[in-house]
Image (cartoon, rainbow, N blue to C red; front, side):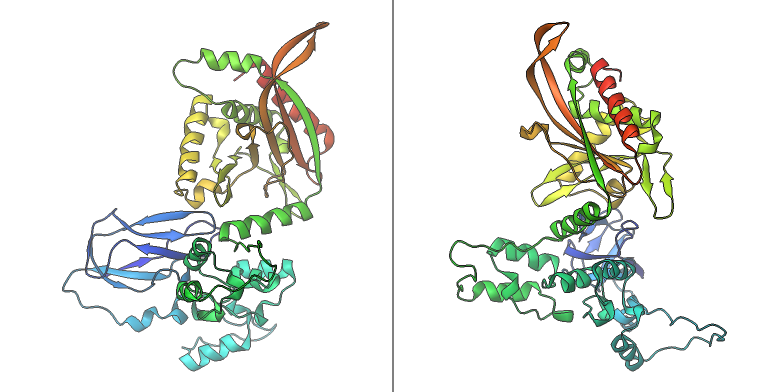
Length: 438
């Protein structure tokens, strides 16, 4: 009998939920065939079966959060006996860590906990029942995680519980949140019946079928429940703006040479954003201090240029990352960024696709924006905001000409990047674009 586990989805993802099982118990599944889809805070991902056989048991139903590497199903032969399923209880899928040893204390042999002792441990409020991400978020938000009701397996406190406690927002399963948005249900009025008071799909269905009540804010006021992506964006952007001392520089770029270069490329059709990405990669190699991050007691300078680019989605923003961009040609940058953008719009990004960034470009030119400032996408220390290319009159050699002008604004973290370095870097990007030196 083969155990199917919740996959490790990257260092930043501790828990995930299954959106849908594509197979039912008793169905045949082939190796490499999609078995279920997973919802994380950034994307919905299909999980392919690592083995062939019959899906004998589903241990984790849809819409339930579970830590990564939790056993969610069993695949085996049709007539193979099932193992003892009690070993896959929630308490055992998220075992509590032993209490910290006092100085001079001799460690005692480990003992097997009974269900009663597990319950006592959970009720005692020890940090063993708190995930690392939840503990870090609790410290930042000033929330006592041991006083927070946990909705994770075995009553474990997860990051969502801490955020909900800090913002006094209800805890909601991903499916319930999506259904609430479709039905227009105000989650603040729904009583949760799940673990830790979490609102489930059934709770939203009951609320949707009940007579509509007048909103507290009066007619015309509509509350929109936060999606997991929107909640994470709000949390991280607020953190970045609060912690990093931002400052901004803007330059105008004459894109005439780049436009001519683009028209002369026959084998592929690079976008103007490809030019910007390529120019940033080359400029970072000249000014490696831009490719650094704040580490509290030091500045960490990263060797590889992992350049991210913002992609707008209906429910938020995601930043795919081209890894080791300094080793890639303009054509390779074009192909890889195009594929990543397509995966982002189809909700097929993997955690590796959107992690590890060292510099980010946000381009709103396609939306007709001339100029804007962007919030730094941490752990980066800078982000480049790019506007549209617009025909403008400029003075050249004493005469007035109409040129395609694009404005770029660099947001920098002053803890890491001094103004002179930022100015030189931005000037180098401008020079590469104006000379079409790709």
